[in-house]
Image 1 (tube, rainbow, N blue to C red):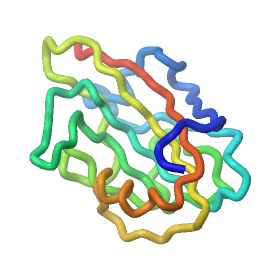
Image 2 (image 1 turned 120 degrees about the horizontal axis):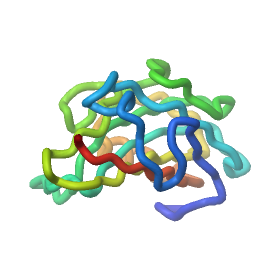
Image 3 (image 1 turned 135 degrees about the vertical axis):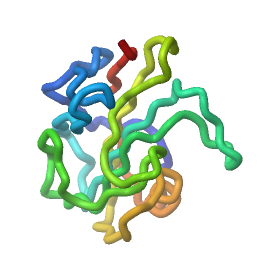
Image 4 (image 1 turned 30 degrees about the vertical axis):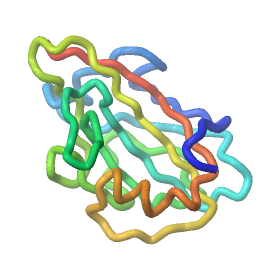
Length: 159
């Protein structure tokens, strides 16, 4: 399928599409991941992955990637359609903070409003990948099995 949007819907009770992410989910607050719920996964879905990426971050790597990765979570079974706030379940990849687990929004001072893309990715096979994969490594490994994806975009501006 490649990386095209599907009919899946991703929501959070913490913020609406295009809305401000509450400070408790940021690096200036408690730094806990927001709850997420998804519906309408494609038929045949056997697993999910979650990514949070800030494309507005002023960073470009030597590998040609851009922005800042805040969360990589995978090995989520197909029976799961939600994540609780602050979840520590499933397998954590490595964020651009250099650690595993969620790291909330915290754009540079004076940098304005950033958009944070929370992605849900549906896979046609159950994967059992090792922990600590970067976003790029995860996408490279799961791309052949990607059958659907969609995103929830929140915004944050540092106080």
